Image 1 (cartoon, rainbow, N blue to C red):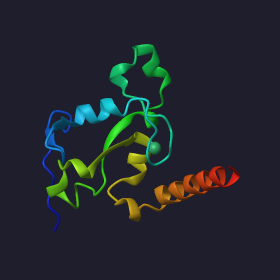
Image 2 (cartoon, rainbow, N blue to C red; image 1 turned 180 degrees about the vertical axis):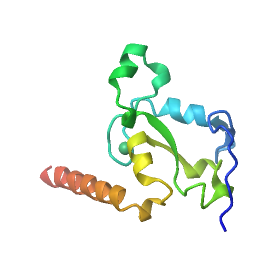
Image 3 (tube, helix red, strand yellow; image 1 turned 60 degrees about the vertical axis):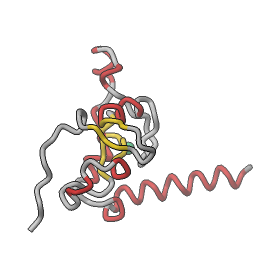
Length: 125
Ligand SMILES: [Zn+2]
């Protein structure tokens, strides 16, 4: 029987960082604006920084979302642990579902392709 994760709003929860400072889910998303998604490499967007017109041009899948590296459905005690949170694009987050990263074949395949592409670039130099 699995435990249910509390339905707190991650954006407003204060999260303790390893260095003793604090952040919030909202700040994690703000920091991810225009950063590459760590899974697919696409540029992520924080819709709060976009105009209404810009928002219409950004696909939902490219929006920054907070991801639990270890899913909160299986690891509820890590739901608000800083080292278990990261910003990834909504497309990757929805593909991953409740699987851990290593359980998700689709994301693992993407990461292997990106690693192979990076190796090819560095082997040319
Ligand atoms: Zn992604």
